[in-house]
Amino acid sequence: MGTLKSVFLRRACCAVLGIAMMAAVVPSPAKSADVTPVMPFEKYYADLRGDGKFLRFNAFSGDIPGKRIKALLRSGQVVGDRVLLAEDVAVYFPDGYIVQSQARFGKYIPKRGIPAGSVVKADHLMENPRYALVKNFDKILGKECARSEYANGFAALRIKRDGVMSLVLETSGLYDPLVDEQTTTYTVTSAVQPVFIGNQGLMPELLAQCGRG
Image 1 (cartoon, rainbow, N blue to C red):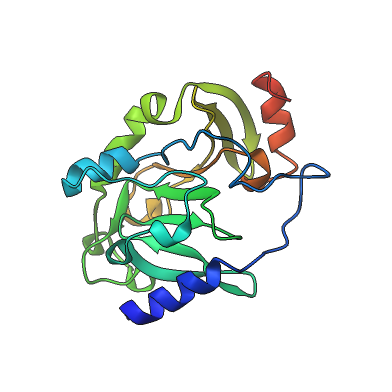
Image 2: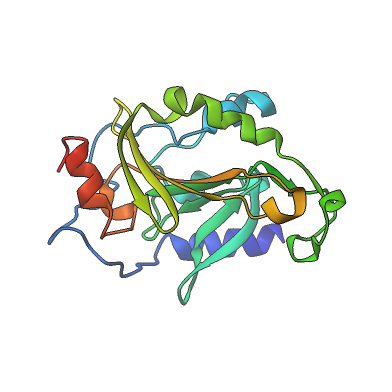
Protein backbone atom coordinates (compact mmCIF):
# COMPACT_ATOMS: atom_id res chain seq x y z
CA MET A 1 0.00 0.00 0.00
CA GLY A 2 2.91 2.34 0.79
CA THR A 3 4.30 1.85 -2.72
CA LEU A 4 0.89 2.54 -4.27
CA LYS A 5 0.57 5.76 -2.30
CA SER A 6 4.02 6.87 -3.46
CA VAL A 7 3.15 6.19 -7.10
CA PHE A 8 -0.02 8.24 -6.92
CA LEU A 9 1.73 11.07 -5.13
CA ARG A 10 4.39 11.18 -7.86
CA ARG A 11 1.65 11.25 -10.49
CA ALA A 12 -0.04 14.06 -8.64
CA CYS A 13 3.02 16.24 -9.01
CA CYS A 14 2.42 16.28 -12.78
CA ALA A 15 -1.36 16.28 -12.77
CA VAL A 16 -3.25 19.39 -13.80
CA LEU A 17 -6.95 19.50 -13.05
CA GLY A 18 -9.15 21.97 -14.94
CA ILE A 19 -11.35 23.74 -12.39
CA ALA A 20 -13.85 26.57 -12.68
CA MET A 21 -12.03 29.85 -12.21
CA MET A 22 -13.31 32.86 -10.28
CA ALA A 23 -10.84 35.08 -12.08
CA ALA A 24 -9.56 35.21 -15.62
CA VAL A 25 -6.03 34.32 -14.58
CA VAL A 26 -4.99 32.59 -11.38
CA PRO A 27 -1.27 32.44 -10.58
CA SER A 28 0.35 29.15 -9.74
CA PRO A 29 -0.12 28.54 -6.01
CA ALA A 30 3.54 27.73 -5.68
CA LYS A 31 4.40 31.24 -6.93
CA SER A 32 1.42 33.15 -5.56
CA ALA A 33 3.11 34.24 -2.34
CA ASP A 34 6.33 33.89 -0.42
CA VAL A 35 4.43 33.16 2.78
CA THR A 36 3.13 29.63 3.16
CA PRO A 37 0.64 29.57 6.05
CA VAL A 38 0.03 26.46 8.10
CA MET A 39 -3.14 24.52 7.25
CA PRO A 40 -5.93 24.82 9.85
CA PHE A 41 -5.93 22.23 12.65
CA GLU A 42 -2.41 21.04 11.74
CA LYS A 43 -0.80 22.43 14.89
CA TYR A 44 -3.46 20.76 17.04
CA TYR A 45 -2.91 17.37 15.40
CA ALA A 46 0.86 17.79 15.54
CA ASP A 47 0.60 18.28 19.30
CA LEU A 48 -1.45 15.08 19.59
CA ARG A 49 1.14 13.16 17.57
CA GLY A 50 3.95 14.79 19.49
CA ASP A 51 6.10 15.30 16.41
CA GLY A 52 5.77 19.07 15.98
CA LYS A 53 5.44 18.68 12.20
CA PHE A 54 2.63 20.21 10.16
CA LEU A 55 1.66 20.86 6.55
CA ARG A 56 1.49 24.27 4.90
CA PHE A 57 -0.43 25.65 1.96
CA ASN A 58 1.61 25.83 -1.25
CA ALA A 59 3.92 23.12 0.09
CA PHE A 60 5.02 20.32 -2.24
CA SER A 61 2.64 17.35 -2.03
CA GLY A 62 5.59 14.98 -1.93
CA ASP A 63 6.35 16.33 1.54
CA ILE A 64 3.20 14.68 2.93
CA PRO A 65 4.46 11.77 5.07
CA GLY A 66 3.24 8.46 3.70
CA LYS A 67 2.26 7.30 7.19
CA ARG A 68 -0.23 10.16 7.41
CA ILE A 69 -2.09 9.16 4.24
CA LYS A 70 -5.26 7.26 5.09
CA ALA A 71 -6.77 6.99 1.59
CA LEU A 72 -6.44 8.21 -1.98
CA LEU A 73 -9.38 10.31 -3.12
CA ARG A 74 -10.81 11.09 -6.53
CA SER A 75 -11.42 14.55 -8.00
CA GLY A 76 -13.76 13.94 -10.92
CA GLN A 77 -11.90 11.57 -13.24
CA VAL A 78 -8.55 12.28 -11.63
CA VAL A 79 -7.02 10.03 -8.98
CA GLY A 80 -3.91 11.10 -7.14
CA ASP A 81 -4.39 14.85 -6.66
CA ARG A 82 -6.28 14.52 -3.39
CA VAL A 83 -5.66 12.42 -0.28
CA LEU A 84 -7.33 11.83 3.04
CA LEU A 85 -5.03 12.25 5.99
CA ALA A 86 -5.14 10.09 9.10
CA GLU A 87 -6.96 12.91 10.89
CA ASP A 88 -9.77 12.77 8.28
CA VAL A 89 -8.66 16.00 6.62
CA ALA A 90 -8.76 15.97 2.81
CA VAL A 91 -5.83 17.71 1.12
CA TYR A 92 -6.06 18.87 -2.50
CA PHE A 93 -3.01 19.48 -4.75
CA PRO A 94 -4.06 19.66 -8.45
CA ASP A 95 -0.60 20.60 -9.75
CA GLY A 96 1.52 19.08 -7.01
CA TYR A 97 1.25 21.86 -4.44
CA ILE A 98 -1.27 21.96 -1.59
CA VAL A 99 -3.99 24.52 -2.29
CA GLN A 100 -6.95 23.36 -0.21
CA SER A 101 -7.85 21.42 2.92
CA GLN A 102 -11.27 20.21 4.00
CA ALA A 103 -12.46 18.80 7.31
CA ARG A 104 -15.87 17.83 8.63
CA PHE A 105 -16.93 17.97 12.26
CA GLY A 106 -20.09 16.14 13.30
CA LYS A 107 -21.03 15.67 16.95
CA TYR A 108 -21.44 11.93 16.47
CA ILE A 109 -19.40 9.46 14.42
CA PRO A 110 -19.57 5.68 13.94
CA LYS A 111 -17.84 3.61 16.59
CA ARG A 112 -14.53 2.06 15.63
CA GLY A 113 -15.03 -0.87 13.28
CA ILE A 114 -18.53 0.14 12.17
CA PRO A 115 -18.72 1.42 8.56
CA ALA A 116 -20.75 4.59 8.08
CA GLY A 117 -23.15 2.73 5.80
CA SER A 118 -23.90 0.21 8.53
CA VAL A 119 -25.05 2.72 11.16
CA VAL A 120 -28.73 2.09 11.87
CA LYS A 121 -29.10 2.84 15.59
CA ALA A 122 -27.70 5.13 18.28
CA ASP A 123 -25.64 2.29 19.80
CA HIS A 124 -23.53 2.33 16.64
CA LEU A 125 -22.40 5.89 17.39
CA MET A 126 -20.01 7.66 19.71
CA GLU A 127 -19.34 11.33 20.42
CA ASN A 128 -16.67 12.77 18.17
CA PRO A 129 -13.70 13.96 20.29
CA ARG A 130 -12.69 16.36 17.50
CA TYR A 131 -16.02 18.16 17.77
CA ALA A 132 -14.51 20.13 20.64
CA LEU A 133 -12.46 22.05 18.05
CA VAL A 134 -15.64 23.84 16.96
CA LYS A 135 -15.41 25.96 20.11
CA ASN A 136 -11.95 27.10 19.01
CA PHE A 137 -12.87 28.16 15.46
CA ASP A 138 -12.24 31.83 16.30
CA LYS A 139 -8.67 31.03 17.27
CA ILE A 140 -7.98 28.38 14.62
CA LEU A 141 -9.82 29.86 11.62
CA GLY A 142 -10.11 33.54 12.52
CA LYS A 143 -13.17 35.58 13.42
CA GLU A 144 -16.30 35.13 11.34
CA CYS A 145 -16.71 38.12 9.02
CA ALA A 146 -19.65 37.03 6.84
CA ARG A 147 -22.69 34.78 7.11
CA SER A 148 -25.48 33.77 4.75
CA GLU A 149 -28.29 31.24 4.55
CA TYR A 150 -27.25 28.40 2.28
CA ALA A 151 -28.73 25.01 1.28
CA ASN A 152 -31.02 24.49 4.27
CA GLY A 153 -28.31 25.72 6.58
CA PHE A 154 -25.77 28.50 6.83
CA ALA A 155 -22.45 29.44 5.30
CA ALA A 156 -19.88 31.56 7.09
CA LEU A 157 -16.52 32.94 6.01
CA ARG A 158 -13.57 33.32 8.33
CA ILE A 159 -10.24 34.92 7.40
CA LYS A 160 -7.05 34.81 9.42
CA ARG A 161 -4.35 37.46 9.43
CA ASP A 162 -1.98 35.08 7.65
CA GLY A 163 -4.32 35.06 4.62
CA VAL A 164 -5.97 31.68 5.12
CA MET A 165 -9.71 31.87 4.45
CA SER A 166 -12.16 29.21 5.53
CA LEU A 167 -15.67 28.62 4.27
CA VAL A 168 -17.70 26.93 6.99
CA LEU A 169 -20.93 25.22 5.93
CA GLU A 170 -23.34 24.45 8.76
CA THR A 171 -25.88 21.68 8.21
CA SER A 172 -28.05 19.42 10.34
CA GLY A 173 -26.29 16.45 11.89
CA LEU A 174 -26.38 13.32 9.76
CA TYR A 175 -27.37 11.12 12.70
CA ASP A 176 -29.87 13.45 14.38
CA PRO A 177 -32.85 11.08 13.79
CA LEU A 178 -30.97 8.24 15.49
CA VAL A 179 -29.83 10.18 18.54
CA ASP A 180 -33.09 12.17 18.82
CA GLU A 181 -31.08 15.36 19.10
CA GLN A 182 -30.60 18.45 16.95
CA THR A 183 -26.92 18.91 16.20
CA THR A 184 -24.87 20.85 13.67
CA THR A 185 -22.24 19.48 11.31
CA TYR A 186 -19.50 21.89 10.24
CA THR A 187 -17.71 21.38 6.93
CA VAL A 188 -14.59 23.55 6.77
CA THR A 189 -12.93 24.25 3.40
CA SER A 190 -9.76 26.33 3.65
CA ALA A 191 -7.39 27.89 1.12
CA VAL A 192 -5.25 30.95 0.53
CA GLN A 193 -6.84 31.78 -2.84
CA PRO A 194 -10.66 31.97 -3.03
CA VAL A 195 -10.70 30.14 -6.37
CA PHE A 196 -9.70 26.98 -4.52
CA ILE A 197 -12.55 27.28 -2.03
CA GLY A 198 -15.17 26.52 -4.70
CA ASN A 199 -18.82 27.62 -4.27
CA GLN A 200 -18.47 30.31 -6.92
CA GLY A 201 -22.01 31.54 -6.44
CA LEU A 202 -21.46 32.05 -2.72
CA MET A 203 -17.88 33.20 -2.26
CA PRO A 204 -18.12 36.64 -3.98
CA GLU A 205 -21.01 37.61 -1.69
CA LEU A 206 -19.19 36.50 1.45
CA LEU A 207 -15.92 38.10 0.38
CA ALA A 208 -17.74 41.38 -0.22
CA GLN A 209 -19.24 41.21 3.27
CA CYS A 210 -15.74 40.69 4.66
CA GLY A 211 -14.42 43.66 2.70
CA ARG A 212 -12.30 41.47 0.44
CA GLY A 213 -14.47 41.55 -2.68
